Amino acid sequence: MEEIPGYKKFLSEIIITEDTLQTRIAELGAEISKDYQGEDLLLICILRGAVLFLTDLMRHISVPHAIDFMAVSSYGAGARQSSGMVRITLDLKADIHDRNVLLVEDIVDSGHTLASVLELLDTRHPKSLRVCALLDKTTRREAVVPLRYIGFDIEDKFVFGYGLDLDEYYRNLPFIGVVDLDQYTPPD
Image (cartoon, rainbow, N blue to C red):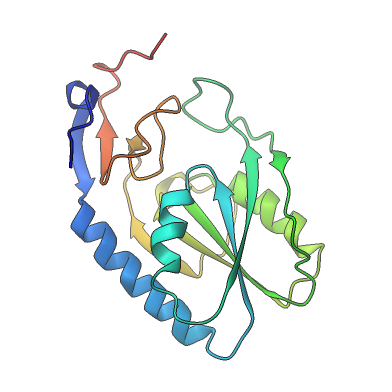
């Protein structure tokens, strides 16, 4: 794999390697497959951060499933934490009424954004509504959100890579790293 330039100067540490990510995602896929055996399943990916996770996860889900996408915004440009104001910028195309819905999320910290999305989706009367989150920052939790499947519990650190952006860049890194904000300069 060709080296992705620039990130090493502000990479504090790699907290989850590519191999560790892929091993855990395979385990999650097997667990989801077991739980939804014989059931209709719709995976809803929260854009943009969860795209890599969704594509790898769905390769490990052996039950038939469909996918759809939502885009939700609660961060302003350059913000490092949620504003608490949640906007749906892309809504579902699929009707989720009486379907098993699994929301696929990259990271849950305060939980406010996810709680708002779950509340909205619940009004559409799915048969079941569960969450699969790659990363869980439980120490930052302010809203109660039921996470059924969790990839990794992580400390309260600013992370990037594997779908998680740093000012919209570096989503393509194959690992999850911690940003040294003292060394990071946002792009122009």
